[in-house]
Each structure stands twice: as C-alpha cells, then as structure tokens.
Length: 376
Image (cartoon, rainbow, N blue to C red):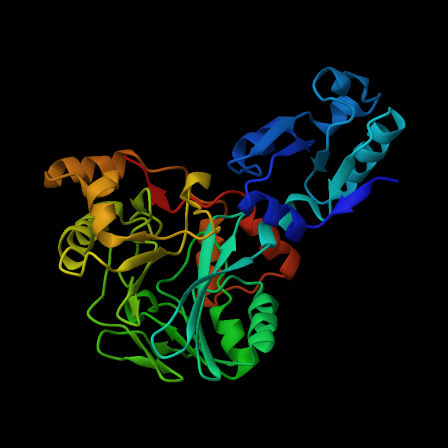
C-alpha cells in the first residue's frame, strides 16, 4: 500500500523549499489552469486515463527510487496510480490526501510580528489559492481579517492561543473566494465589519468599516484611518495595525496591483485605483509593511513562508506603481486583465448573502487560482 501525505506535510515542504517531485494525474486543461507550485517543486502532468493500461511509461520520466507525490482532483485516482506504481517497482510513492480539493483549503499560519503591546500578528497563507488572511491577537482577544470560509481553522488557532475572536473584518466584498468573516463572527459571537460602500446589496446586518472608526482588540488599536482606498471595489478599505502594518486587501500586492473590474466597472473604478495607489498610499510612511490579501507568484513567499514587503520598496520595484502617465496607467489596467475568477458572480452573491450554496458547491465554486491582480 502506498503512503498518503497530508496537505500539512506538503505545505511545510513548499515553505521550506525542499526538493519535491509531483505527478499530477488530472486532465491537462485542469492542470494548465491550476497546479501545485513552489520554488523547489517540479511537476509532471500525466493524465489518469493515459495510465489505465499501466504505468510502465512513467519509468522513462521518473527514477523508480525517487520520491514522488501523486496528486489528483480529490484523492481517489492518485491513490490508485500510486499503488500501480508500487506494483511496477517504484519504491518511494505517496499520494496526496484529498487531492487538489484539500490543497485548495489548506491554511498555513505564519507569524508576522510581535506587536508593541505584547500582542502578535499572524498571516494565514492559503498556498493552493494564493489567499492571505490575518489574525491580530492582543491580551485575550483576536480580530480576523479577510477570513476564508474554512472558519474552523481560525477557531482552532484562537483556542490554541487562548484568545476569543471578537472581530472579523473584510477589507472589501470578495469576488474570488467565499468569505468566512460573517460565519466566523456568528460562531464566536463577534462583530462582523464590512465597508458600507460594498454592502448596498447585502442581506444581513454588519458593522460599517469606515475611516475614523477604530477597532480595538485587547489593548491594540487596529486603525481604519485614513485609508478608504477604493479601486478594486468602490468600498475597499485598508487597515493599519500597530502603526506598522498596512493590510491592503486586494488593492496592492507585492508584485502587482488589484484589478478594478470584478463588479463590471473597470472604466469607472480605474481612476479610484490610481488615486489610492499614487496618492493615498503615497502619503503614508515608506516604513509601513504591506500585507496583501493575495499573492500571485511563488517567488512572493519569503523564507519564512510569509508574503510581505515595505511600502517604500514597492514604490521602487512594483511595476504597477511606476506608470506616471494617467492614460498609460488606464490602458495598462484595462488591457492586462486576466480571466475572471471561476463563478465570481455566484461568489459575490454568496458573500452578499443572496444565495447559500451547500458546502460541496462552495468548494467547486472556488476551484482554480486567484485572479485578483493586474500584471503590467
């Protein structure tokens, strides 16, 4: 019997940059759209149906004594292929438990910093989706920012740290993944915060996330000032924690900038995006550490697995911040838009509370890479 590998084990390998060989047996179109990536990860795609009559051809591509991890969509086909490979004489084969579906849902917590008052800030890296969420802890309280729908992970982490989640915050109405913010607030009897300009069509009660309305966690003040920062959405609001950490949502990333079109209003919102990036953020301290809500490239992961950069450095090297001409910027943003995220309209409706898909349907809606960025 082949050995199974958990997503947690694979995540540690990716973050630690350990040499890893993956055999992905999904169809080529699925593989081309979305795959496991990492600095030291090599991936071979050989569709499952090509292996039904035998795996002999794999020995031409893979040393039989080499460690290999077999991956499929949900974990069934990969286990069968792994067992066939063992019968063929491959000696070090693993299958990934739960396949790409499980990989999509794995969150890896990484400590960003100790805060001034003795609190701490953590980033949760969703390696299979490129989503980043955060937990700020102070004394016996916590706030979670841009939570994914796998709320049990945040609850278990808070329990481990001995804190109660008092606030959940969405920097904007998400369109590429289903937010867990409202559900997490309900489960922990906390307060859910959402920018009101993104909440015109929501079907639930929320606390407005607005400039001047500071949110206190324990003895830490999470300042929501002065950063109404539209562009990705009309309500996008950035957050400053501890006067040191700038949570930019989907407005500014380490190697790219946010796309303004996921509500169908690219031409209307591109001006807001430029104003935020070239004026509002420009007025802030260069020393602020930017913590975005997504990343697009494996190389954005730091040595500890976190995604972050100083604001001043980004003004030197992020191509999206280098376009002085306003018309050129508008062209860059509207001409370089990637494909829309899978089912983004239904994801928006779910996050508005207009529809409530079953959990399995929510998983299907989120399959695929994040596509929140514009790359120059």
